[in-house]
Length: 119
Image (cartoon, rainbow, N blue to C red):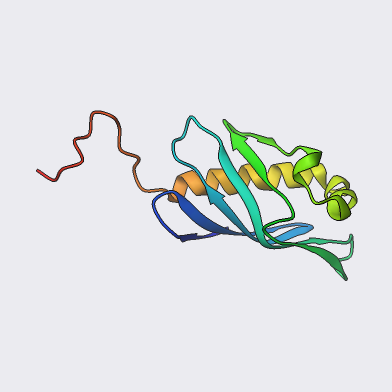
């Protein structure tokens, strides 16, 4: 996976995981809270990688916390739901991988004991 920092809490993460490829946007504040993930430009390929459906930012929203992805049906664009459901298990794994990569690439998160000043 490739990661592109947008700010301290936002990243674009590139994925090439079997039938799901493309880039996802992830935003999170702290490791013990949900990280929200949306596609930027993601393709769900058919079995032979000959054609696929493209998902953009308004097509899907999911959250991941503690290695568990939540992808509710109402958070997927209705016309794309059958395509997402076909690869649901793989999509959940990809979402978890995106968030794992998100935290690995994240700068150190300040704790409440940090003063925020350089000494």
